[in-house]
Image (cartoon, rainbow, N blue to C red; front, top):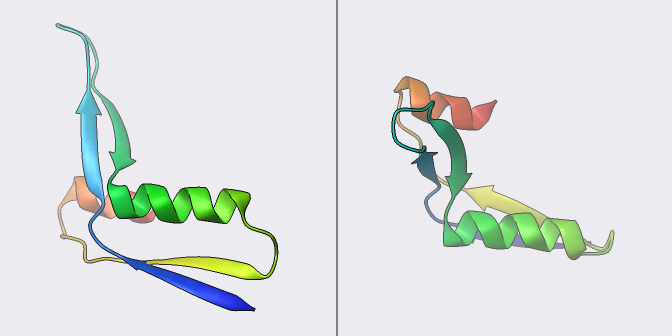
Length: 64
């Protein structure tokens, strides 16, 4: 089995319309590439992602 490792940062994206609730999502070029490779690859390729996280509440939610 082949393994592909992506190393980079994952960013927290906060979106909202004026005076409405914030929506939280995650993005980043390396995260997106790892996600899409894992979605389209056959079973002979594994995508892995390596990054560093902070200890604040928003960063810890990435792990969930």
